[in-house]
Amino acid sequence: MKLHSISPPPSISNFVSKIIAIEDCKLSVDVGLPLFANGYPGIAFQTINSENISNSSIKTGNLFLFGQTITPIKLYTPERLTFISYLFYPHALKMLFGFNAKELADSTIELNFLEPAKGMNLKEQLLNANTIDMRLAIMNSFVVKLIASNYTDAQKSILFATQALRRSKGLASLSNIQKELDISERTFRRLFDLHVGISPKMFGRICQFDSAVQQLINNHFTKLGDVAYDNGYSDQSHLIRTFKEFTYVSPSEYLKKCYDFQMLNM
View 1: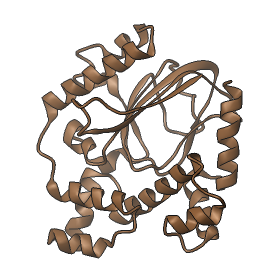
View 2: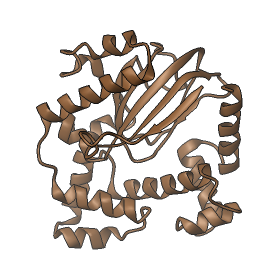
View 3: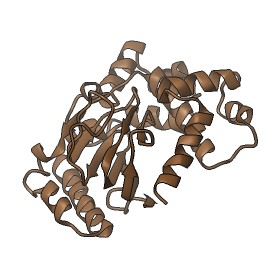
């Protein structure tokens, strides 16, 4: 197995935060690929077409668009697969696809039925490609076409709000952001519902949680209490409760699952 975390090329970097690619991966029922809240919608391709690949009512084919993930799911399959995901900035879902983002929260749509993916036979191109580099080139080309055909100016308000929450690990004052934008609380919530898909408060909590996850997986801590403190949690118990809410497991269990996943794919 090879795991790649890739910076998007400049042509799409205003819309794509990061690209994750996993080659030749084995996912057992016990050791699957967890997908949980991180604040990013996106598109994903997998070489296995199985509607039963996950432990969720959410169905995933070869190629799909997904919104904000709140309820965690786990992908698993008896076969080896390659998985590629392009994680978009929170505001990009509405801007590039035209959807009310709230309609896609905890949900997916088959991407190959939408333009320009349908017109360029995106799924077939990806399935027929032989290497990860070829697949990434095809996906990059698709996103460039998507931007060219659907781009509209981003609402400066939602850009400001999501960036403020991401930079502050979700700890920025929502009332201060709202006042800075000079909009009512109701308009603020509607802005997030339409463009992000979740409330400002939930998005802030997810930003805080994702910051803690990144600190854990990068091993930038001595004890778990450090992670709680560094990310604004009241104490270690608060962090553990949040972890269980968004992943169904504790931080220590999550780290063990990451280790088991690596061992399974050595």
